[in-house]
Length: 460
Image: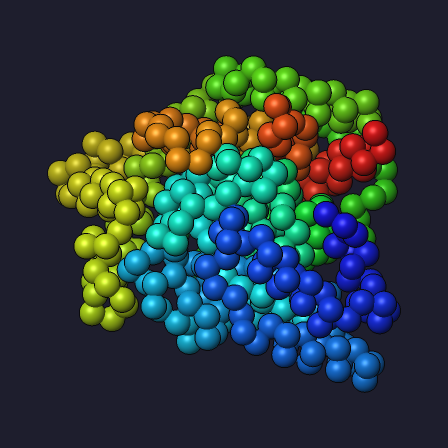
């Protein structure tokens, strides 16, 4: 990956590396690699001009912000002025954003340079990165295998060194899943910590925007830049700003309590679980206390999630009727998008709401209560991110097998807690990520745990 995110930032601040040089290198890597990888749908034609403006500010000694000169990729369901927010769909393939999402405003205010719009599963409906109308994304860390989804392009771009940081979205694991498969760092923030204004919804009660990065410090840096209350949004936590970077070190994880559940092994491929068990042993060696916690209903989250998200997605897509935005969604969308629309339409009927949707909400409450009870006993819960290894690109698998990728990530979304992923090891050359789940606003503990493992692995 070359130099770390903070090292590169410091080099730009000191004048050893110009913002233009950094962005130019990113664009060259994209040009060289992206025909094969398909991590981007569109590039920003103004990226170099924006980088030049940062360099001028640096020369004048003006404030440039904590992301100054860094090359940022943005998932194609987040609005960026003048670029297409396609959601990787034919529905919105010609929709050019007329405004910046709140998170993009914050990235720009901190001097970050948007280099382009990342590929993704169509309307964020997918766990593999294969449902994009612009073609599937390859996995740079395991070529020929899926990169995971739905934030496939962002994770692949980081893994290939095409940009410094990326903004992804996570509704049921869409940051953490590809972070695991591509061997990068991803964070799903606590629900309500990061503004969603300017995000094209998949499931409004579940969606969160978060960072993908090559290292923990980079993820912490981007999260610091985008987190905090937006007065224009009603569903936000009362947090003005966050600070993580200067508190990542300290005593590492000594004395922290890490929860592990026997349920993880029941749901996970033994090869994957072997890598995760070794990572947990490392945390114990670093001074963390390992505590068994009970999550008896964990697997019930999967069907509950798909019922809830289908209802919310059906509601969110009614505006795509071909009159105001692009083409009518049902006429041009892919198989998985249509499946969720029809499912949501069916469940939304008055006669079925009690039978399906209300019961799914009850399971959501149960999952939240179980996770909250477990997190009262521990600081974080550590386990596998995805229960199995990624399949090969183009390999036909059943719908239920595709949904099964989400077993272990969905519960954090249902509960509204935070979760992060860091590479724990490999199986047959394919990355496997450790998922660290934290309390509401427990991002610092999650980042500290991930950072300790990162430092330990770099010393081996």
